[in-house]
Image (cartoon, rainbow, N blue to C red; front, top):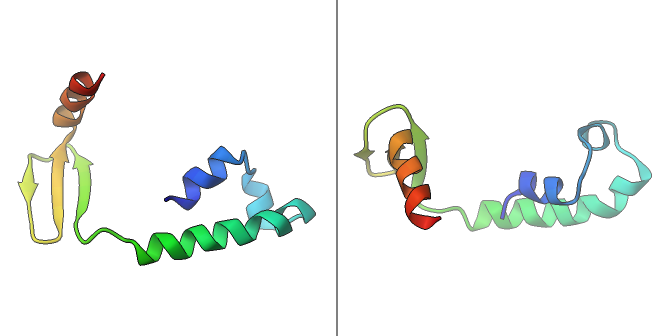
Length: 76
């Protein structure tokens, strides 16, 4: 559900996005649909990672980077 990830998966060159090309004419419909879906299905609360300590606010939860690395160890 991310336009950037979709572009990366499609191996879309940045120049193609900025300058346009015949190939992009076919792919931009999929990018547009993905962007609209992404905006409609936006989570109500954001999760952010940073060097700050853990804190939970009404609209955002901050996960410290050391916690993320521990989560990766547990999942792996």
